[in-house]
Image (cartoon, rainbow over all chains, first blue to last red; front, side, top):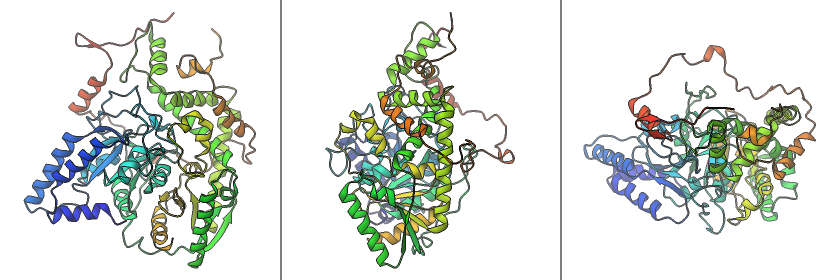
Length: 465
Length: 89
């Protein structure tokens, strides 16, 4: 698939379409869609911005590449004056007082936000069923889940309701729905894009990233959003990735985790397709190494221990005092408790309680601190791996998307389905899902800050398998 | 008052109980044997250098931001923002 952004840009510049007509068409599609991908439409704002782009073109002024390009935003990002619900009862009437840095950069480049997109509440889920707006349906088979937590964003891109969407990835929330809906989804190196204005789930792995239909669109949007931000002290400086720099790949050696593929949990077809992809890569003269890695249950348990601890802390601010759906009770403490009990979903409560369990006295040494130590080991393991190989290739998920309704019945199975994505989150590594290789795609991972190499190898794979 | 706080109190969630599914995840960590069990974060340095802190200045919010913060306030009466009763036993 070629760049949607460049195609639309060309159509606007050559006056084949007006920006207003384009935006109206996409808004109509979003409004009528039956996939539950929309939490709220930003129609007034979008049409006003589109009219400005049309006026500029009519005046013969030059427009930037992203000017007039319609995009979607996962409903966990602040955009001043719009509802930002995190798909939750607690914040269903909450309006963003300010705008997230990543989104502001896109607005400054002229991109037009159309929609706040459905997702698992506060990012808590892998299926986009944990939401007050109805389970998001898979773009390819609507009886299946869209994946999550950025499920609405993945579906909107797959159906071309948006040219690209901005998701959030804490343990796989961009990469897994991208895989389930056959599009690209990129989790950059931790810190490459500012988290300011993204509702915090687990701050040490939360990443902002794009979902799109082409590698080129991922590159364009990534470049615009990247950069150090004084409002997020964990953000880092990075250099722009040019189209030429990723056109050819010099990757000599790749690796894959043997235990991911030899696991009993992997679907036989996904396994066979993954190994067939490896053979095609070998046939191109690239060396492939089998790597040892941590067992899936260790990865999932380490991730959830730390993510739950961080979300228990981050969500403690949601008590209905200054904002949110406060439910009054006889005193302050009771008001907090009733507000939180009535407004959080079962899954969110499960994670908050789990987090407070591991942080509480008597348990923190045995679980939380040990989890941190395991995480260090995982990161060390990655450092050693990237001395031997340039790229690590993995399946995105062990199985195909479940039927809508199945994941909610079995939370442990849902947690374990994140086995192939959470390790790279713990390592804070750049990882891209490509819609190739297996029915839920492949993940391409490089060493920290080597986001460019990921995109290079993705271009190579596009022509190889 | 007992010094032991249960998870429902810690979480401010009424009747909250530890979940069996989540406990299974924690059991895996309890039984893990990390080689560097000193629990000092050696790889994931997310801390910020003191020489790279943002300026310690007060930034005035815009009028629209203040307006939205007021709009979000859950309870208002006669032009006042109503907070929960802070009377403790």
